[in-house]
Image (cartoon, rainbow, N blue to C red):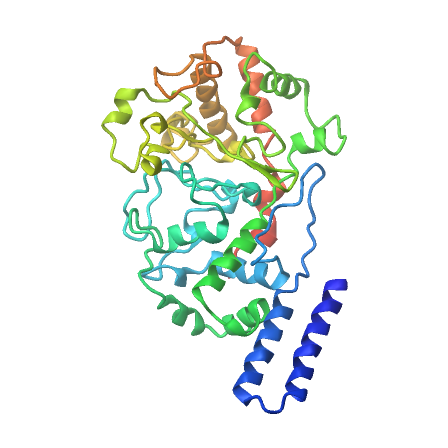
Length: 401
């Protein structure tokens, strides 16, 4: 309320200034009015409705949250006019039912060129100080949006210029939406990215059965098997928490809304020989740094909603067998949970094996250990309890079209 009062005072000051400075040209007065309206449009009316245990996300100072931006961003996220040929939107690789992943090992953009890494889910992306699998330069959602929009290797949405802004303007719904979100600055490339970022920051997932058990004091939310798996996850036998700790189950996160941490790891899914023959866009952090020791290093993803984000790892190395895949003829009658259970079992067995011989691997963490079949099943059951069914169906994240 204080901010609104301040904004009104600013507007009044600008309008008053227009009155007491008659020597100024009308154009100048119009500019000042647009600026004042812009300030009002940017005045944050946003109130975070966060799950228990979740900190307030960091938001760039030049792109404060507002209801108008979020609603505009939701429209743009599902808008196919944001692609070079009008056939694809951001949602083309980020499906809500899959926590905004897409279920593929290598998705393709409008030219059907396969992406070198798979599409990450967007659950709690607001807390990520670094985005994508292995690009440390992706420090904000506002910056990252340019990659799928304008990237050439690979081509995703395939925009080559700002002509798409005219296409947006041709739809009568957008002019007033941009006006409400950004005041007089109109339909611009930056405003498109800023609205998309604002919408994505609202994709907060924190109502899984794990959350109910841990943060909402519902001690019946997890069963004995899942609790046993939780203890293994956070224990020194499996040691999963070292790379997948905290409320967001990753070591790349903002802490307390201020301090940021990000790391890149080799988890030994491939050896040195494998990476030596890969093209320069598939070798992980090395692709950006050129440092040999960065080959095969990727960001540890959040495990939120992992039950629907298979296939796992940056290249989809771990997927369920066709017999457990509901999307395959052999898996008729199976469910997503069946597929996830199969694929997650393979992931855990990979870590039990100590992984392959890769020079970038931290052998103090990725080392041989043994679980009993029951312990392995408990781990899988716990991971499946990280699925937030409400997030997967919440209409506030769904297509407005």
